[in-house]
Structure formats: C-alpha cells, structure tokens
Image (tube, rainbow, N blue to C red; front, side, top):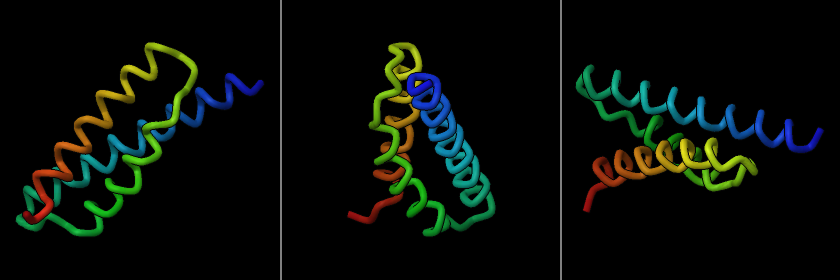
Length: 78
C-alpha cells in the first residue's frame, strides 16, 4: 500500500534525524562539534520536508525538522 509505505519512510526519516541529533549531543559533550554529524543533519533536514500524508505525523516531523535547523544554525559559523 502506497500510504503505508509513505508512512514507513516518514517514520524512518524522523528516527534517523533523532539519531543524528543524539550523535550531535554526544559529540558536543565530548568537546567536538563533529562536522560529519553536522553534514548528516543538513542532508536529513531536506528529507524531513516530504509529506507523509498524515497530519499528526507531519506535525511531529515538522518539530523534528525545526530542532535540526536550530542545531545547524547554532553550529554554522557566521
């Protein structure tokens, strides 16, 4: 089913973004911001914009995307 597949992919993208945020937290606690993690967050943020077709799931993904964008902004040199 196409709708179930879209939902599954959306959930996987959300989980991947949350895992990357956790990796960033560990890297920051270790004293290094980790450019690899930052680049991964940038790539993942683009994928979070795709709609799952479910309003509630899309709202959660939008919150994750916002957190990712905030962390990217904080770590990007001005």
